[in-house]
Amino acid sequence: MQISSLPSIIFSPSADNISIVAEGDIVVNTTVSDGSGVAVFDNSSSYSPNKQGYVNIAELSELVNAAILASFDTDTMLKAGARSASCTLRVAVKGGVTATTRALYMSRQFTVLQPIFATQIRRRYLIEGQPQPVNILTAGQSGLKLIVGAAYRLADNSGLSWREAVIQPDCSKDYFTFLADTSEIKQVTTAPDGSSLLYCILTLQQNDKQADCIRFDIDRKTRPSMATHFVYLNLFGVPEVVTFSGKDVEEQELDSDFGYAGRDYIRLDPQLTESHKSHSGWRSAEERRAIYDLMSSPYVFIYADGELRRITITEVDSSVSRPSNEPQSVSFTWRYADERLMRQPFIVPDTGKASVFAHPPFDKTFA
Image (cartoon, rainbow, N blue to C red):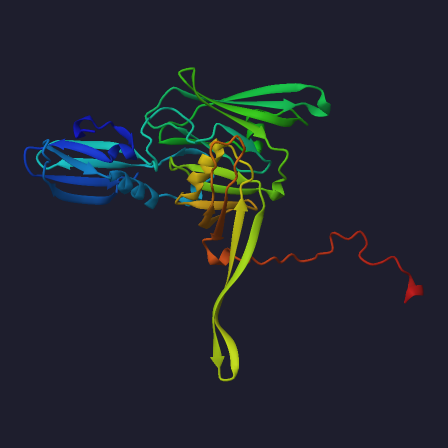
């Protein structure tokens, strides 16, 4: 892409090959600024044109993505509202042309800017208590409308009801996050008293025409206590959730040095490490692509007891046989990033509230 035709908003891969027409050596200044306008990278270099008379500035996407991640606040992973996932990229030729663009985070070769849900999955399953952020690409967009529709079974199986609500996304930043967990869906659509949620559909419209759509079915087969929820930064640089319904195997490993101190064989610098191997359960091809994204994400958390705890994936077990009509599964091994989260203490005082009788109903006969 020639510097003169650089759009005002791009995904970072579009900055991987910027061409500049040059008749001789030129000096190019490249500046990357964060959302507050502070320069996080500022460099000037000399370049010589190739045989075709062009200077090619390559691989700026890695620079842009690193700058965005450096200012990312992990406390916003499960927050609703407008969010940023971009920085300002400025390429200036000394004494010549200058181009400035708003570069969005993107870890894959994806360059089309259009109003979409920033996820690879269009059909998902929800479990009660599961967090579910849904992000809408709003950068450079207008006339957007989010329609939240939900189907309910009325109390006592007396019938079905369809409820809808319209939300106007905040387009002031790059993305708008809507929390599509079951409690939020029920609240937004004003669920009938005593009803049960069957499924919900999120429809994104631009100028009253459908731009994208996601369907959520309620997963009643997986027990909430058996599900493992992973929250991660996806390829768009926004939070996403993938839930594993397979077993989670916890393993402990002792790392230590051993030797003799006099006549005693002792252990030196012992470290007990806790690791988990989580299995996805059967997953569609669409869900597998999201899991691949999870496994390469720079930020991965596990959601447990209403809290996010950062983890590090240490090993992956994944294979695909083709052609095949059978579902596939994935498993990987992970550890808590913070050592203090391993072997968490389990201390619950017994206050006696669970007992019907504080003491057996015996009289003095049994004294």
